[in-house]
Length: 312
Image (cartoon, rainbow, N blue to C red):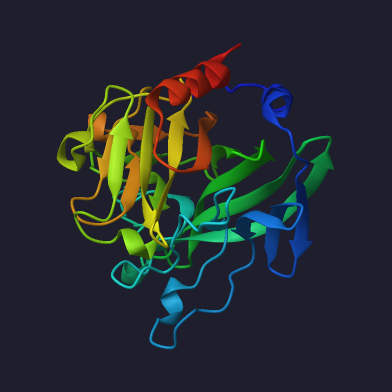
């Protein structure tokens, strides 16, 4: 399942063409923070941080994910350790229902303590011209094996820029088997890259969606196969959101969506289309662009962003 990846340097050049304001990535303690001037764009949680509430069990502690994402006006569009889904984070990658060497580790639902994703290292934090970014490594651990066993090795490559009206984040997830055994992914309705929206978006009416074909009903957005989807709502009484664009080079592109029926949760889930596997000697690469904006979504503008993203 080897996928073709847009060259990382080409992505940087494409993003730089949009940028009007410089951005800077800085390692601060257990996080990497990306800012434009004094405006925060995102935080990446490297090493696992402190649990935000005393009632949260230790099993939920983790690193290796985007902890927060902001609009150009400073609106927080994400949540972390959502009360009813403690394993949900701003933006993270994981797999739910899996099969590995006859066992069934679940790397997504951390409360079951059968699988987890660990932060390993930050390899690079860089700043160049009008873009900034970092490269980090994670590992997927089968907790049901005795002793525990690393299943997958993952590298994240992240590029960030802004033009003052859009914060643009490119995330590339590169996964390889850590052993000679494949990770099998049976057909399932979620898993892959996940997004948890601001807590103000909780409830059926709190979170809104818009897809490339114009779908707004979350029940129809769920399982739709489209190149992009805007997810948003009101924060502090003002509309804002994040548009997810999936690379046409991704496995099974356009990948189907999972939209939760009553919560601000969204993901791309290629395994909705049937069983798949990450196999030894074959790289699984998934690339996404997130465009974070204030105000109502503009389908025509997003169509232009899609053309920019997919231009070769």
